[in-house]
Picture 1 (spheres, rainbow, N blue to C red):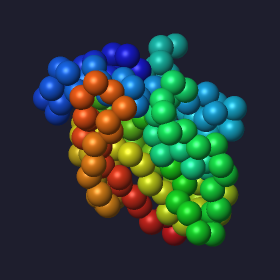
Picture 2: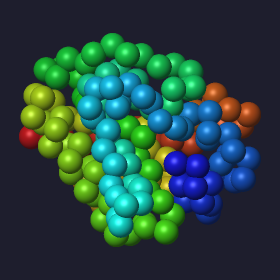
Picture 3: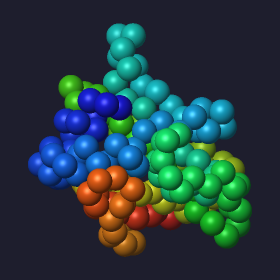
Picture 4: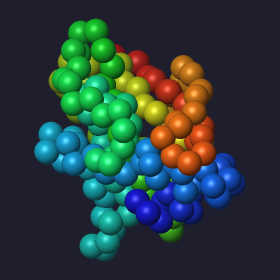
Length: 157
């Protein structure tokens, strides 16, 4: 996660924004407890991770402000894509797509018909290529400087 945050946001954010993004990025252990977080390994090394959530928190790690553990209603609310990270030496190998496909299938199996995320600027190209649409663009202001994010969503059924 640390390498992905440090390296993959270069060219999309200023160095100050990269550092500030750490306030809103990181692992949410609730995803592991819920069994909705996936890891991809290659030769015994972790090369990617990410998942989905049936909870209201849109983004952020254990340390982030604004977390909401409320269970979502699949009939009226969208599931969430959460905490997507790829090791910088393993980008563009299909790892992100694999995790997205797995998460979408699991959310669909639980009755969700749509899914959304708070996308980083570096993640937007992948999510657009995977059929997600930009709903809004905004700034996370939890860190020292504002960090741009985009709410993106996709119909699952």
